[in-house]
Amino acid sequence: MEYGQFCPIAKASEVIGEKWTILIIRELLIGATRFNELQRALSLISPTLLSKRLDSLELDGLIVKKKIQGQKGYEYFPTQSCHELMPTILSIGEWGMKWTISNLTHKDYDVELLMLYLMRSIQPQNLPGNNTVIRFKFTNVETFPEWWILVDKDNVDFCTHDPGKDVDIYFTSTIETLTEIWMGRGSYKKAVREGDLKLVGDTNLTNNVTSWMANSVFAGLPAASEI
Image 1 (cartoon, rainbow, N blue to C red):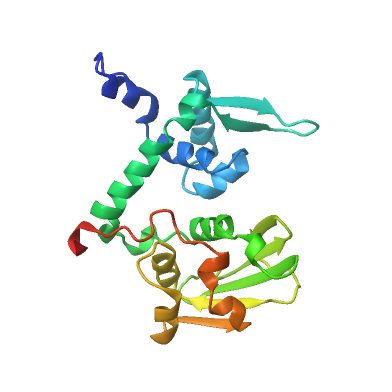
Image 2 (tube, rainbow, N blue to C red):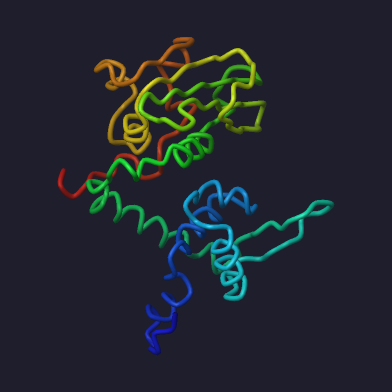
């Protein structure tokens, strides 16, 4: 889209103002490099549109596209101009927490995105031993209500099928409850106390969840209605 204006806001909007582009940049800046990782984080975007947006970002100099050695496909890496958008992305997130977070509806609670963010929030160095298995059960999710996060030393991944390993800690709640906690609009202890969350496992893990699974970078920012 072209606005036909010399204003730098207009010119910037021509580059990053298309639908999905900001969210693709968000994912690239927090470490996604492969097409399937971006698709997983942006589940409603079609592969065709994702490819188109990535091509545009490459053309505009925001990403570098590199062939994966010995494999099919490509990896995508943010350039300096893309990295310099990080303060802007964070500012948009802070504005969203203040002015739009109260507008969430049930359809906004994306279980796959939540699990991706929880996986990224794991801090393996704060977990005992080299291997940890965490199971999540969402009581109000019909498709794939159970998820597992697998920690193997510094490698962290998640899946929707029982990996056949001993589970160290169990989370049982609605998707809304766990999302709200991760976003900093609640706490694990309060949710457990009020019966909205069931945590089962070693007390060293259940009593100190945020020491090994961090909350959102926007956690703690109040909504405008709460100020």
